[in-house]
Image 1 (cartoon, helix red, strand yellow):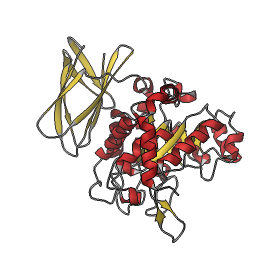
Image 2 (cartoon, helix red, strand yellow):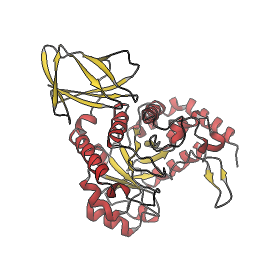
Image 3 (cartoon, rainbow, N blue to C red):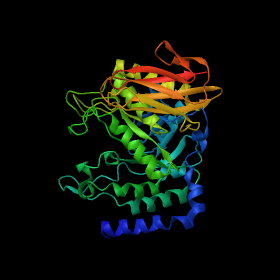
Image 4 (cartoon, rainbow, N blue to C red):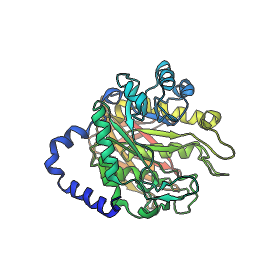
Length: 390
């Protein structure tokens, strides 16, 4: 087997000569914006590796996509999803290829987290990650078999956290990731700060934003960027995210450029539950409300982000306030997230909004006044505010 260093060198050379492949890059850069993903009012909100039998319950919670099928796709799984009207991202196995004319399959996927150290079998330890060159090779094979659908790749927490030891010999090698994302049309990652056991990450929700921002940078904004969201204990014996933290992770991701969300709803503590979200009344209600708001704003979120027209004047607390500004059908939308677990206030100055205007704070039953595009607000720890301005 070729050494990892040799493979990375070859991949780097490929990237350096990418300019001669401009037409091919342009063709694949928006390859994920097809089918359902091309619809302006469809924003991907998914669950990871769930039983098709639960599709109607997830739809009631605002989920509109499945990602992954256990040991599938099988004909039975696809029939169940077809009956529910739940689209799926799945592997391109024999059943999948035989169903390539079925619109219920909206994208193909790689195996999960190839950037992590790979198991050598039970009791045999772990080998290195799958090299990026192999992911690119697999991508070309998947696309050759069906060029009509995008290819999805989910990466591990090394996207956001360089010190993640689960990468084995490639720990502290973020330079691998610009190579990995050459092998997909949609790049995603997962990190779960609330339930994380390492003190460097535990409780630091901003690692979600860091990972999204890095994927946007590494893809050059030319591919879809998604991310996973925690909403259960996963495998932590005592800690699980609150609805407030989940809402913050979601909007933190969106503000930093995520174009699709995947809820991780499994739980191993205190006992295994594949669909733990469905058993948690409080969290299910919160996730449903988050998803409904995103669905209502889907055409806004899918539109262009307006850069360099909003200025945030902080209060000196040291808490950054991240923002994203959109304009849609005569309205301005400013989405703002406090990026630390501390209270803060900020003044927003938005160009192009002369005079006095009423600022509606969505989901909070309150309004503010804007004077020539200037208004201020308070942020509790990990707060999210969604502003709509006529």
